[in-house]
Image (cartoon, rainbow, N blue to C red; front, top):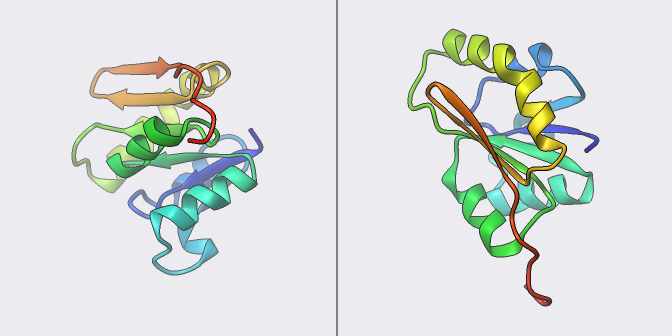
Length: 121
């Protein structure tokens, strides 16, 4: 993993508080599609950090890479989201070593390793 691609549905200031190389989707262009973000992350060995279930669906259908960190905490104020992610980020990075998907739920963080994908998918 060379870095994190932060989806546009999350605060841009996360790029400054999370460890490692982080890029917010807005830096790449305005209103890029999920497919464009997925392809960019895959081509550049980036992990997608998102609140969007569509990236989970893509991961299930196509497998990893890219890996996905799916924020499933519900609606939080921007400052609360930044605080939460900065506090649990070391745990997220540790799970990304072996997990293809890291889910962030209220009160827990879960890493999931997906099985191998069939050829041609």
